[in-house]
Length: 454
Image 1 (tube, rainbow, N blue to C red):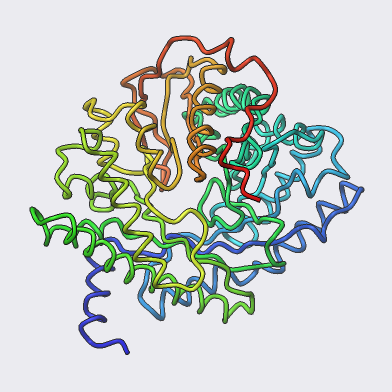
Image 2: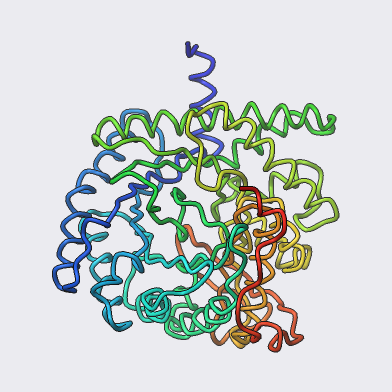
């Protein structure tokens, strides 16, 4: 039973501590839309999305109003388009036409992002996957709401280094195609190792082929709630600290479970998962880096930061998994730079470097996320950064990702602005030594020995 004290506590979290449901994401399978006729395929895609998602935004607004609970985003994820368009698409421009259809459907139903302009060449690339990947710069420069992702490796298959090399060039092309907007196209493009099929968070959301025809996934948040809770245990031992994080994560996730079940019931679509990740925003008081500071670090990036983020990530998972029957997605703590004001401050003053961020990705939820780098960074250097992060994910059997933004025309110390939840970020220094010969070898890095567990 919920008592009055819990009601009062939850209201305080919403009003004073930036507690929100970050997203309701409707996952939609487009497999039954497949046709070898491009015009028919686009018509099928538009019709299915606008039919199934017609009440998504309205449902979210109703739940917000009835429960006085902010639901920041309503989003859609679809089956990876490289699979859906394989029969009908014979050029990159054919795939771009699908991106425009997805964008039109997203605007029609009123969602802010639609994910799934994706390919999954973890072991090798099909012709369709290569065409889609090469279409990404044009697709993201000609759409507003579409997000793209590419899975380049996994613990079971190794790392597709041909795709890694290609993606370094694609990220640069995407930056150049949107150079007039601080290369914002790259903020809607992420590469993965071990990408999950049920992630509700952008830009990496897609609807995996193992999923049902449609599902409702919810992503909760609440770094401000965790930070405020930890204020009460300053200076106390790690056992006390861990208990506080677990109990708070439980309460946050229960809220997400409630919203997911309500949205599922009202839309008549099955409930999928709750992703309990702590996702920061540029707002003061809604920051992962602030949690680290309350834990005892002067700034994110100080010695002890990796240990602190490991502790936080683990306790959030332990608390959250007891609050929902179906936890999925990424689930843990995100460490994007541009979307976290205290991370931005730490990067600006030199406390946080790319190398330290990479170390933190070994124990956080995702990887190098929303990081602005100099606009003249070479494509092969970007590929080297991707390869490093893919290796961390492959060897550690976890999801890792790279979403870096080479901001054309800007250099170290300049500021890039992306707007809204995407925030702003200082351009960070990248190691200038060459990795060209390494990333240009071609082929595949084999799966690690501990992957053989059949």
